[in-house]
Amino acid sequence: MRKKHMLIGFLIGLLSNMAGLYLYVFFFTKYEIEFALQVSYEDGFIGKLIALGAILNFLPFFVFIKKKEDFKARGVLLATILSAITILILKFI
Image 1 (cartoon, one colour):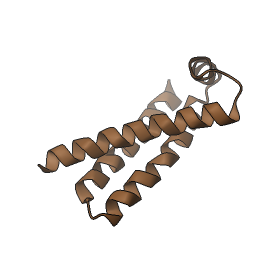
Image 2 (cartoon, one colour; image 1 turned 90 degrees about the vertical axis):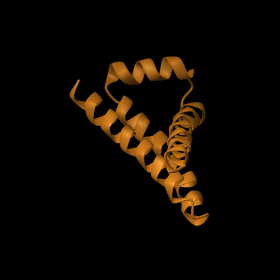
Image 3 (cartoon, rainbow, N blue to C red; image 1 turned 180 degrees about the horizontal axis):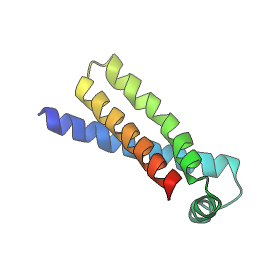
Image 4 (cartoon, helix red, strand yellow; image 1 turned 180 degrees about the vertical axis):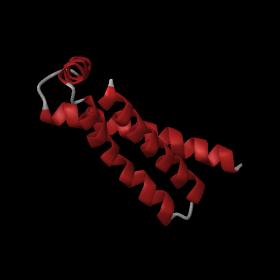
């Protein structure tokens, strides 16, 4: 049961990160999401864009903490760590 809750939290964390990235592109750029991701990758600031998307992970994390759903909160934290590792890898490519 714990693994299931962590997986749910992880998926919510990934979706939250993608939603945050999409919302940033939608509100603060004039480009479509595909073009914005392509340009940010070519210009070397895709990591910053992913990090801005990860800010939205605070919301489900603290909701799960407040509701005492610690394993779901761990899943969100793992998704955030995965985002950080992805940013680190992209930084060196």
